[in-house]
Image (cartoon, rainbow, N blue to C red; front, side, top):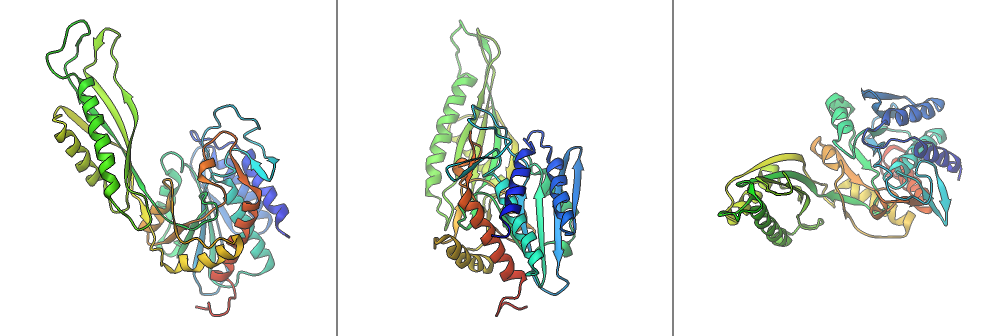
Length: 386
């Protein structure tokens, strides 16, 4: 494979740059990619957002009419906490696996699609339309990079298609659930712990609210979707304390509600409000902490139908369109009229874990898939002319 050394160089170079978020430091990774693309004479730039935070953008324009295909990934990684058996910010190869923070989520995919695009340009195989690369900051926290990109980009610069390299084990994912995180602040009478309360305390009310949320979670199992699992709600934080001998006057619950693409935040508020009504809790406050909608591309969309046989050819797996198991930024692209799918090397089960790794074979196959898709959309493929 002519591009094997380039893939190794990009993968190792990206893993070595600590882009832990917070605080990010994605600018260092963006500058690294710019240096590589500059060496090949491919137009690119670093889109600065703030100090040490930036996106990387590259575009190869063939000068001939055609579609625009974008590859997208995020430069930030989660903290490398826990007892690692290898150095998280260097590449360790063992038993066909490549270890390092971001190897799976998702610097492996970035190295793969950058390798695919550079190699195709070098071989002269991109002959129509445009191929773009967008590597963003802050996907793991507040989606700062993607929001900034869409604030700055013109309608003419937007791609027709986007492939997001989140880890799917190279299966094609066309949908993901959204997320709504909301605080429920429940108030009651504070008092001395030695005096028996005459009314339900905030702690007791919170326990009843949790029971109601558990019941709501069970009810959500009845919500069916063509691809995605049902909505689900989890409690990720519970806090209430004033002093050892004080019954606290307030309890705060943080909910994490995984929602279907048709569920707006107002719908979430209605469901949480109904829980509180059923549990006869009136002295409370709901406050939005974070919300992003789900996303779904029709599994019969032209991009999905184009990619499925290519994936089957490379991987030997003929699986149909899948659901992506976590939240991702597909919704941003879909909301801007861009056909977007999710396909990348690595398993979501390895993302955010100690000793994160990607299978070396999957990394190589990702390059093959990205090359074939790029050639089909932006190359001389019989019967594919505009």
